[in-house]
Figure 1 (spheres, rainbow, N blue to C red):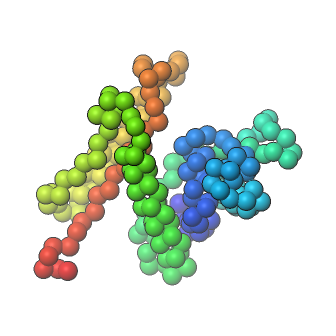
Figure 2 (figure 1 turned 135 degrees about the vertical axis):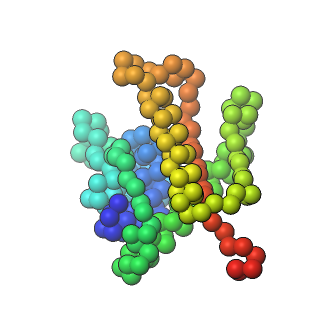
Amino acid sequence: MDARSLRGLAHPLRMRILDLLALDGPDTATGLGRRLGENTGTVSWHLRHLADHGFIEEETGRGTRRERWWRAVRVARRLDTNDFRDDPDSRGALAVYLHETVHRDFGQVTTYLAEDWAAEWRDAGTLSRWPDLRLTPDQLAALNAELEAVVVRHRAAAAGDGDGAAPGAEEARPVIVQLQSFPRKERDER
């Protein structure tokens, strides 16, 4: 993601809109406005802004001139925060983006915990924490790369072999994987 895209996305409402489109599929400004408790005109403006930056696109062949359907563009975007930390023009957008991302992830976890799930789904999820690791920066980067490779492998397996749905697809649900790995200062460094 470049600085222009980051500034285009780094708005709380735009990030919520993109998240809904990515998680739940296409929707209209009216539908999104209702779900978000926002004015349709405001949502439309943010939808156009997201489209201008390539995050979403209009779903052609669906809707009318007054009712436009939008969908998230499914492309891999990687944000390396190091690219923006020293750029004064992007620092504010980066702060908004990171704040909203952490807030969204926290909200998703608390929603999951508050919902009633069947035992097989409740027991399959996890909120794990391993506070006893001691790693170098290279080891932490390697750990993150390995975990990402596992997620990518499972995503590919869930997509199937191209001839149809993957085995067990009728039982599958959307799953959110959140990984947070970061160093912490030791007591005498604080």
